[in-house]
Amino acid sequence: MRFLVATGSSGGHIFPATALIDYLKSPDIQMLLVLPLKARENKIPLNCDNVEYIHSSNLTPQLNKRNIINLGFFFLAAWESFRIIIKFKPDVVIGFGSQNTLALIFWAWLFRINTIIHEQNVIPGRANRLLSGIADKIALSFSQTNSYLKGAAGKIKIVGNPIRPELKRIDKKDALDFFDFKEGKINILVTGGSQGSFKLNDIVFRAFDNFKKKDDLQIIHICGSRDFIELKARYVSSGLRYRIFDFLTSMQYAYSAADFVICRAGATTIAELQKFSCPAILVPYPFAYLHQLANARVLEEISAAIVIKDEDLTVEKINAQLLEFSENPSKLKSMQKAYFGQGRPDAAALLAKEVLDFCS
Image 1: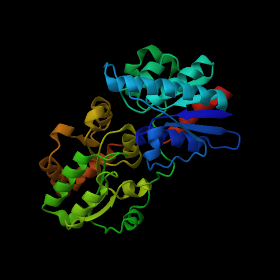
Image 2: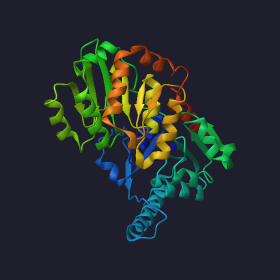
Image 3: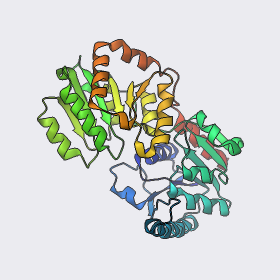
Image 4: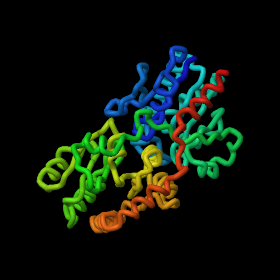
């Protein structure tokens, strides 16, 4: 069997795609992962021996010079996608969103190759909205997404969002030892997603530095490559107990050590929070605001997370939450308990079953 997996360049796209690839690995299955060229800049492990890269574009409705150039790249990517389909001859093409998948799913549909698309967010992206009309199956992470794809109800399967198999809970003491942290402190994980976030990094650091009980804090800060050198220098002179990373592969240790997480609200982050039952302060990314806000509301509605809009993010607000959590530990415990029954830890298996059913 030959399976082609196509996805975008962000961690939110790549992680579920590679989780599926990990699950499907078998001597009887040939896998091909197709990514946009800019994904080469990532530090994200792909866990796939067979990878192809194609040009990508970010088409918008505006008529301007940048969009005309992007249109040229779109047609170039369509040609590259055609060649990949002809050469690899997949039995199934699986798309995980982004414009990078449009042409591959289209050619597969045209050549009567089985197709399935996976939507990670509550609100589906433009690419998956377009492809929902021609895909044979639509796999969703959230049941709430049904309301956005009413015309495709018969093709929808709720499978959850696959996460990496290595993300398993570690004994908390072992997790703290991994970071050389002490017991009895407040352990905080900060992450702005695979690309990092300057505003989140800056405000959260200043909140930690100004916190009146900062000796009680132990911080794991994953800040992205752009802010790493400057932010590390600020931590060094702060007196805080910290571990800072531009990117951390062993996230299972970070989630297992954390008492709570301050982060964006990408779909993969939400799935990982559910997996580890981590209380969270969620700050939806403003340039994917509607998507991330809808994701964040899923956890806010069950009282597992507190949502702060990006424009409302201040040192004072983070300090207020730090103070509440430090003075009221039962708040964190109740947020953790709110996760009971949430998430789908078998999402990779459920999605793999939908893929394999094409070949039975």
